[in-house]
Every structure is written in structure tokens, then in C-alpha cells.
Length: 348
Ligand code: KG4
Ligand code: ZN
Image: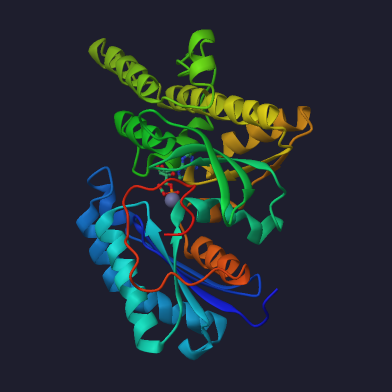
């Protein structure tokens, strides 16, 4: 292992500006600023607002991270930046800032995959990932099942959503229920006082015919439509909408499908470990149900604390540090940011 290696990580793929510093496998600083409150009134992320917020906040977050780590920029050996997937303007804000620092200070630059970073970040809290592990990566833009042999270079996609991402479904259903954006945390909270069995919402791609062809794929758009229809019915009948029950029953349907398919993937691949990653992995019910079902199958669930599930700079700094430590060549400043990428695209 290389000694004395310090990596500054920069995350700007969506609405969180994250800057963090990892040295020798230790997180020294982790600064996250979110423009989420500026998007809430629109019910979703407005790309232009997110890009401008990143540009404004990156210098401040970087200064704060360096101060937290008690370092000057001269103490940074490499910079890592999220190159995709994500909102193009937001990605470019981070990439431009990272390039400026790298060229201006002569620091090597690694362009890293945001999805692989979501998986790799679990190592900060749980140590080196056991191999193989099945990762459930569920965020606002992705719902992927991945077979991870090594977060640096060996990730095989097993399945993905065919339509909405799990987080997107949470966000859209919250809107239908009149709950605040982002929908995931709002539904997570509202569901605590609801009855998950109040309504049997559909579990997409789990029927006998579909579960063969789409064994590790997901579909949440039918579920979202079923919730919208149910709410329309209450409204047209002038009846009060049972928000907590609908939130709990919707959440249960999502969690049931995510847990079932993730554990099926473990059985098929022989993996004895599950890694939860992405914003939806912060969901309390998902963590609980996944933990209970996995325990009964003697499968181990590795779940990073909620703040490391949603977007943050630590995940980028960590993957950058892992690349540096593994001897990978820096990407240099000529990489291309990409709005669409697979978790398997490790080096840009
Ligand atoms: O990973 P992330 O921060 O950003 C993306 O890369 O997309 O994930 C954001 C998504 C949003 O859709 C948000 O509603 C969802 O994660 N989310 C949650 C929870 N916290 C965030 N979904 C369910 N339960 C939560 N507690
Ligand atoms: Zn993300």
C-alpha cells in the first residue's frame, strides 16, 4: 500500500456539492452543501440552478475541507472528480473546477464513476468489501443490481430498472401525496405512522412469467400509476387521502421488490454479502427488511450510514484513493464527462 497518499474528491453530479479528503484509507474531511431547498418549490432538481450552486460553492467547500483536514493544497497528492453519470451542467461544474486545480497546482487527476463510487464508499465504514458481493444501488437516477468482485475494476451489472428509478418513484409518489421534495425522506417519515398492509400495491416484474425473463430487472412506473389512481379515487369521492397508509404501502412494495431481487441475486451468484448503496439505501424500512430477510439466509448486509448513501464527496475521494493505491494511472485533464454511464465503466 502506498503511504502518505492524500486525495481530494469532488462530487457535483446532481444537487449536492461534495468535497472530501481521504488519506491512507482515512476520511479526514467531508463537506456537503446541498441546493435541495432551491429545487423543492419546483418538485425536482432544476439543472441550471444546480450547476450555478456548484460553481458558487466549490471554492468554499474546498477551503472548508482543507481546513477540516488541517492541510494546504500542497498537501494534496491527487484529485478525484465524478465524471458521470449525472446532470451534464452539474458534472461540468465539478470537472472544470477539478481541472483548474489540477493544472494550476500540477496535481494528478482521476475522473471516477459516480456509481462505482456509491458502492466503494461502504468501505469507509465496513472495511474492504468481501468478494463477491451483490450491490443494490438505488438512487434518484439508477436502480442497479451489481455483482462486485472489486469496486476498482470488477463490477458486473446483473439487472437494472426498465423505467423509473426507485428514488424517482419515491419523488413522484411524494408529489402525488402532497409531500415535500425530495420524496424519499418525506415518505420514509410519513410511512412510520401508516399501515404497510393497508393497500396491496403491485410488485413490478415479480410475476412467474416476468421473474424469469426480468429476474434482476425492476419496474416502478406501474406502481407509481397505481398510487396516482388510488389518490385520484379518494379525491373524486371527496374522501380524505390516507397519506400515511399510502406512503407505507407504497414503500413496502418498493422495499419488497428490492429485497427479494437482491437476495435472489445472492442465491444465484453464491455471494454471501449485500452492499446497500445510493440515496434509497438510506430508507429505514429497506434497511430493516433487508437485514431481517438476509439474516434468515445467513447473508450479511453491509449498509453505510445514511449520509454516505446519498451523494457526497467522500465516495469520490475514497474511489480516487483506491485507484491511486491500486497503481492506476491518473486520467489526466482530457477526460469527457458523461451523463449516461454504467457502473461497470470504471476508468473513463
Ligand atoms: O444517491 P442520491 O443522493 O442521488 C442520486 O445519485 O440520484 O439519491 C437521491 C434519491 C432521491 O430520489 C431521494 O428521494 C432518495 O434518493 N432518497 C430516499 C431516502 N433518502 C433519499 N429514498 C427513500 N428513503 C429515504 N430515506
Ligand atoms: Zn448518486
